[in-house]
Length: 177
Image (tube, helix red, strand yellow):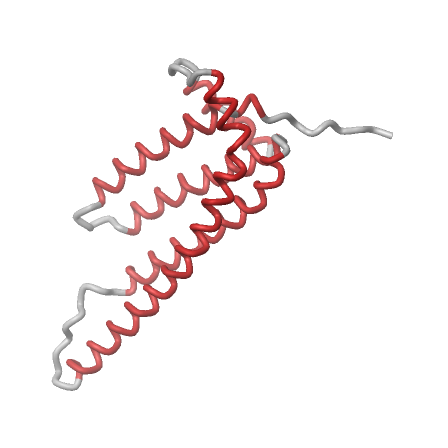
């Protein structure tokens, strides 16, 4: 956890020169981030279920098309190699990890405990890792440059808002007996 706190301080240093949100906006976001995360978790769970259904439907469709045309010696679906499935499964793993960590963060965020903010920071780092791995898995795709640019913009905006509210989350007091 120490290395994560060092990374946290490094990123804070990078964002320090940027203009800050007005104080009342930062206070509002810090007090209400817990229910924003809750809504995100609910929508993410629904999205995950739809994604699983979509992946299963695509796999069934590809299999059906291949089997029908395969009977005539034609391989229609050549573009859907195993990489597509691997990329989908990797994305699902990142999505599930994000949902679990965000769900764990809700109660500490409501109490404005630093543990909640730390969990959001870990979710942020998982998002960065997911973006990098997604870019690597999609090399050769026409949209890889747009995905990388979009990911960089999303990472910068996410880091900005996350670090704008950091000071409003207090560490738990350790009581020694």
